[in-house]
Length: 160
Image (cartoon, rainbow, N blue to C red; front, side):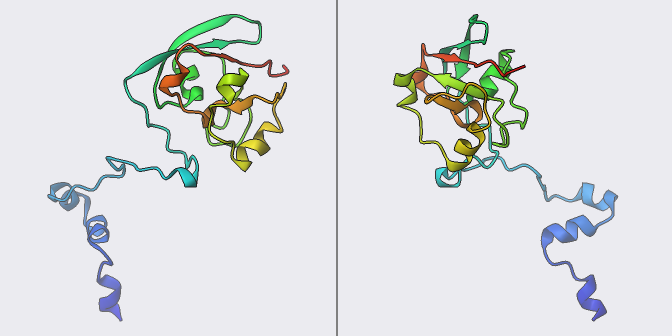
């Protein structure tokens, strides 16, 4: 029985069980972060947020007071991340994990019609949003596409 307890279950476990000075000298490299992540759309967001390219389009955020803020947005990035990258006031309290409605955005109907279908979870979170409209979506759920070039997106008043 004692020999079974001493035997590591895997190579990674054996490396983890080595004293620190031996683990550093090992030729095996263990990485906590994978070099490539694949996403399956049918699984939803899963918190995987880095799918952008270096290609950009111009998007204009319109704040609650009506001021326009044109920005360059990387294709593939979520609109919440684009806003944060450009110091646009769009809260995103949950960090884009679909657990709040503070990244609520309002789209023109023609743009809204091109967006992916809302998930049930997004619909539930939107029920909590201020100034909800028929064309409301959460910025953490919408990725920038080439077709977004020149669009305007309204940031509603958050009620405070």
